[in-house]
Structure formats: C-alpha cells, structure tokens
Amino acid sequence: MAKCREMNQPAWDEWVSTKLPVIQEMCALLPPDRLYLLKTSGHRVTLISYAENRTVTVAVTGEYNALTFEREVFGIKPEDLEECDLPADGELLGVILTERKDVEAFIDAVRPLVLADSKGPNARAHLEERVAPRGARSTRARAKRSLARAFKGH
Image (cartoon, rainbow, N blue to C red):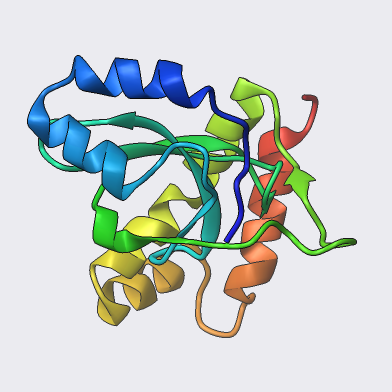
C-alpha cells in the first residue's frame, strides 16, 4: 500500500489530540498520508477532511487517475475505501478538462443521460427515443456530437 505524501507525525498527533473522539477514530482508521481506492468508482483518491458523521471528503485528481475532470467528493464511508498502490509506471494519468466552464458544459451535456440511467432502462430508452428516433444514431455518437457542440468556441 502506498503513502502518497509525507507527514510530520508529531504535528499530526498533536492536531488529532485536539479533535472530537469520532474524528480521532476516523484519523486512526484512515491516515491522510495514504492513497485509497474508492471502491464505488475505481478511482484512486486522497483524503481532504473528516466529518463527525463518520464520513470523509476525498480528492479525485489526475495525479493518480485518468479523468475527464477533477473533483472533490464528500460523504464517503470508510468501508468504501481501501488502501491501494501508486499508479504503475507508464500508466495513463491526467485530466482532460481543466477550465471550470468546460467542466460545467460537460456536466450539462451528460446530465440527462446520467439521470435517465438512474431511473432505470425504460427512462433511458424514452430519453433516447425522444432525442433520436430508433435507429437514427447511437447514444455514444450522439454524446460525442453533443460534447463537440458544447465546447465549440471554448
């Protein structure tokens, strides 16, 4: 398992000692100098903060993943994380979209498909039929064209 950053242990111990017991438990369970795998997405993440409701906020970055855009994710339960290794030498890493306006345009472009997926196959089929009649175009090709339009001129 990989340490992703160096930590001043005495300073860390002093900081932890000033926190609520629940935060102290979280700090012991999930040290901030480790790289974790977020099981639900398969992304490597680093810790940003601990919460009193026994969850953490993590950073999903291009330093350890190949991503469309970087993000912070809150409300992650400790059982959804496991320590993992650093990326392999030569592994594709980085971020495609770095400007906020591009990230927002991307999210706006894919949101209808993501929401339709969350409502089940019938909702997705209904959306696809409404956007493009049967057989007109594939969803992937339509999404590519939509993204191209969203980023045109940016």
